[in-house]
Amino acid sequence: MASSTPPSSGNDTCTTVEVAQLLGLAVRSVQLMVDRGELEAWKTPGGHRRISRASVDRWLAARQQPSAGPAATPDADTGAGGPARVLLIEDSSYYQNLVGLLVREKFPQVELHVADEGIAGLAMAGRLQPQVLIVDILLPGIDGATLITSLRTNPQFSGSRLIVVTSLDEAQRGPYAFALAGVPVIHKPRLVAEFPALLAKCLGRTAA
Image (cartoon, rainbow, N blue to C red):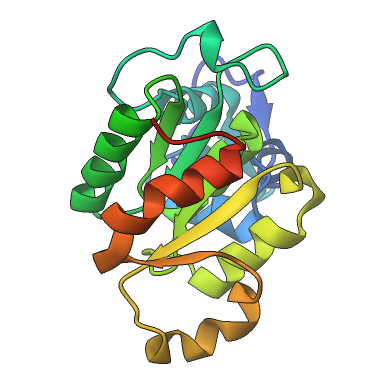
């Protein structure tokens, strides 16, 4: 939540618009992050919001850590001098763990990152530029169709392949039909059976 007074090191500050550009998010999303206390902010005497750059850096650092598991090695090269990166945007710890287990078993050299909500996921996607984005369509704080449309239409993510995972069956996905057109979708009860082959296809390799 915004503070009434700036920190002593107030020179290193950003406007809300600057933070939105830095994170690749909408201004409203940054405002919500401030309201939730995720970013340190205050208002100037003229009523303008200022955000501590240090708090932005801390927020980014906390979300850039890869999930637990074997460290990726240069053998999992993507052709760009580093390991293949996969980003999972999923709020369920059960499915976070399940996807993590499948990746470690079938793709031990892939670097898996996890975001548990959509706004953090968008920021991480912009920073990591993952080869594959795995997204749950039902996430807190953001409309799933809006998130998926943003990922599909933003040139920043043009190099990322998209996989949607959902607990919604085919009939329940009707409201999301436009956003999901042409996107591979895995019904969560079929995750173990279908995910490895689909991820392998997106990565251009064969599952172990």
